[in-house]
Image 1: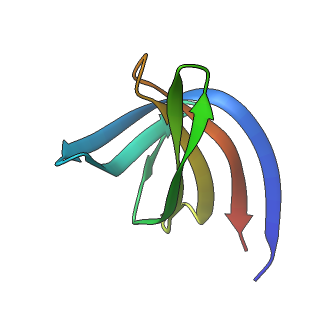
Image 2: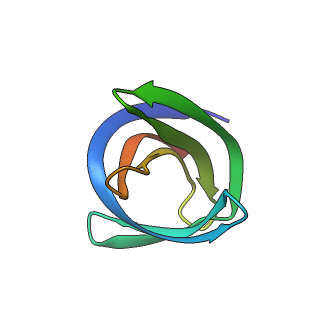
Length: 87
């Protein structure tokens, strides 16, 4: 398997389920295309000024892509940080 990492740093729209302080990403929209999230493989928090950003690694099997998404709980905005095409 070959990974081609690409930086994005762009806003995305996300549909997520919030339950007991856990976030489950269901799908996201980027560049007018919807990506169904099949798996969240990792998540971590990074301090950001007065708050934190929560980062997720997600796999979208149908689109053959793995992405790093970031969530800012302060302003409730999501961003795609980078992505790799699964070949």
